[in-house]
Amino acid sequence: MLSDLAYLSYPLPPDIQRLFEAGDFARMNRIIDARIAAPETPQCLKDRLRFQQAVAAEIPRAYPYTQAQLLAMLRRQVRDFSEDELEALRDDGTLDWRYVDGEVRFKDNCIDSMLKTRAAYAARALNPQVRAGAAQRSRALDAVIAGMKAKGCGRLRFTLREQITVSSPRLTPGETLRVHLPLPVVHAQVAGAQLLATSHAAAAVNAPDEPHRSVYFELPYEPGMTVWADIAYEINAPYVQPDPDKVVCDHPDFCLEEQPPHVVFTPYLRALAKEIVGGETNPLRKARLIYDFITTKAVYRYMPPYMTVANIPEYFLSGLRGDCGVQAITFITLCRLAGIPAVWQAGLYTTPDSTGNHDWARFYVAPYGWLYADCSFGGSAYRTGNADRWNFYFGNLEPWRLPLCSDFQQELNPPRRFLRRDPYDNQNGEIESLTRALSVDEYETASRILSCEELN
Image (tube, rainbow, N blue to C red; front, side):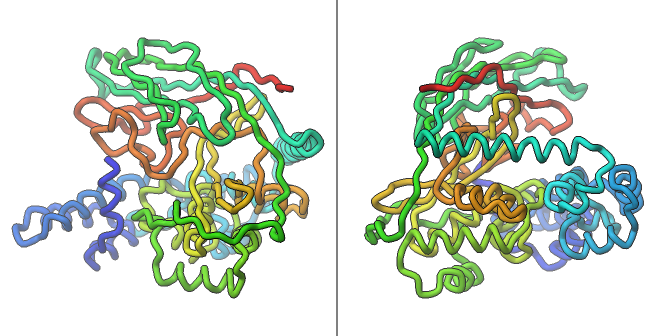
């Protein structure tokens, strides 16, 4: 449940913290069980410790590879890769790692992250599709942005299938499953959305403006069952060139609040926001200074499960490494600290033939209203020397976006009984039984573009 996330703001006992960082999860769990059983332990601390056990369970799954295993994988994928290079990439933060049982373990997708952000290693990739695919995606993105600028907007209609397939020996045939599949939130760039068809009768369909909108099912489990929903939606993405000289410097008082445990105005974040913005008073220029800091100083890196991070903006701004969602929530937090209203959007990046999870931000500046900022796409453009695209993603998005969430860290409707796989987003759907949350190895999620057409 979302209320569990408040526990991330509570401190851990020092010995528990040391054991967690060392990856000694067996001893950590044993000590936590003893503390929970002790009558003198405050109830709020017991809740924090139980949540930490759930957090710790995610780490071995997210960091499966020893150094020897990762080196062997890198040598199969990158020409003439050396152990010294692995050490250097570990030291500079490119290859994410942590301790599990006292041994260094590497993130499951750290090689993909390296090839995505380090052009020199992508050029040495033994799979030619690594280079060709990146170049093809870049050309397609530049083309759609150029078309959008020429027409003043981009308008597309998509149909999409979202699905969850469930198969687990730990489930009993016939037991009830509770399934949420995401639906487009009708606001901002979504001009309209329809639920076309579903695999099973829906128990509930959320209102169009529900922050984490979904279609909900209660179904008896059948091994190998697939629950799906077909969706149609229209995207209207206008192109704007915001001019700081036309900005109206009023100070609206909405979307400026803290939102624990992540949108929190800590002393470090206050100091950094002041350092970034300096004496600037124009809201658009302040937002641009924040965007420029994130896109030029930090580097994209795939993340461990977000629930394992106590404070996402501090994690990002202390290491300057993180993925799209981390960069988006950091931009939002810094904007709010600077007096600029900012909110979350998350969903899918949907080209005419592919989909992928993605997060970005919106910020408010009068007289333009809500503008967009995609720091991860902007940072990628900056690293490759594409200044036009870097500038585009401050203020704009191309029409290849499907917002499934209009705010960060919102409850599903009807609410979940157990902690969600992703308590901050609903990009792929969620599933649980009446007695427990399902593990990630018990189901698979997928989304597929069925059609895409340009609108006049």
